[in-house]
Length: 395
Image 1 (cartoon, helix red, strand yellow):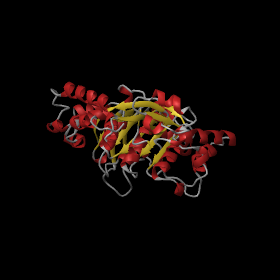
Image 2 (tube, rainbow, N blue to C red):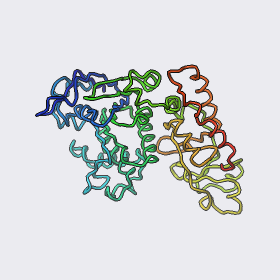
Image 3 (cartoon, helix red, strand yellow):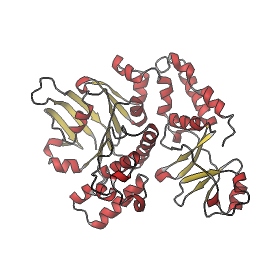
């Protein structure tokens, strides 16, 4: 559903200055639009007016061609998913009960609710049998966020609002959750409004970015590529910073470059057959084709079962990860490649340091004469570090 804000403002009682002043924008159907701006800029207030958690003082908001003010507030909120920081889960409810909240309000039958809860837990990478009956306090921060996203998607809403949903987790978990969201979006194609203060996150996730200043005044509303290439003013340039050249890697996805293959086997497969197919190293998969360990031929000598061998996987990326993510994953452990997963965490292949180096060189050659997207610090682009990683004896 397309969302249109037409001259929307919000002034709180007793205040002369509006918190949001005259915002007009169109959020295309099926895209992720990211609101980015400093604290206090009104970006969350603007987003909450879409589902009427905050009522606008003036202006109109239409969702799928319908005036939001003409829709019963409860009906409207039940048709819009809402995910917030730290999941916002009810502590006295189990994971399954949390996800089932809106379907129960919509009076779905029990079997339909159970099937939907299990489907969503699988969708966000949590085993229903293992996690369904846990309480939020028994989950890690990243797991809570996954459940929060699952709950927001429970009734299959066409619109999803996300208010800094990954802001309270560590950087590694945050990157994984961002990748999960991109993978989900490739399948579901929801209209998503995402609020953040992190411009790198906005570049990674957004089909379009709205850079907001005070009172949510729009400084620039465009694609990440256009904003990186041509910041509209000093405020936007401040968000872009000095790393515009490096941020070009955030505009390309792992799926956009060559993904190589390594031999794979399940734990019940033949040791001899697996060893015969390995030249350098191979990947051991679980029953759902998710990578769990890696091994080489020396590990397989004299063992009776694949279940007895292998080393834990290091950092992995998804097909929705950026090339920046892939570069960091490889350099973090000084490996020559990193494993790539797809929907439901299934093995897709590997991306190698050679592929990244070739891509980095191409990007630099393409942009070296374009001052709009190259910067004085671009000589510190980490190609040299990337090349040095190929000398590592690991993997």
